[in-house]
Length: 211
Image (cartoon, rainbow, N blue to C red; front, top):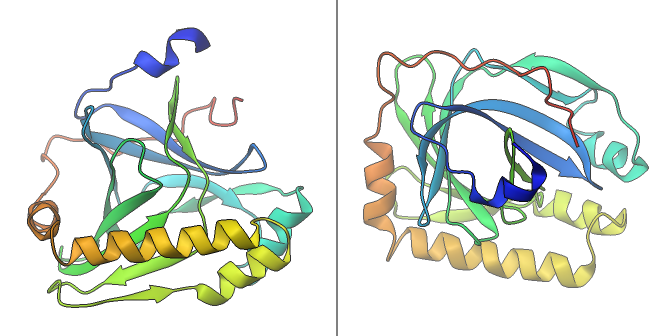
């Protein structure tokens, strides 16, 4: 498959892909995931406990400073603690994560994750995380912004501009508000989803660092 036809790729439910997060066009994280839906209306991926993924070799407190330095090492981690159904409307600058506990599939809520609109690649999808989150309660009655302090640090370090930070904040608030109003039914449908029993755990493909 050549880069010229990347935009026409359509994956089928059960296909394994890589969701990659980039900073300054370099791979920051590569997470193996399983396609739930890939249509003109929605892209959704399942990230399963036990998946081995690549991420930066640094602590959470260090990660923005490391990203701003533009040089980092990656190491392998195990995805633990939670099931995630990651969903993105094509062209929308955010994804919505439906989250369950890994041990018993107890639904714990949703997260709005602002990010660059998805870019399709021959191995999956690329995006850039925009630091801020909005956490939505499991009963869809409330939401609150999370990591505003990290967004301020990202701006101070030059990873984002003041204007970008304000736009990210507005977009995140707008999407979170819709999640507890006009998009309630969609989120409730996602919360009722479960992966087919025959699905296998995806693996981190050998070409996960490919440009």
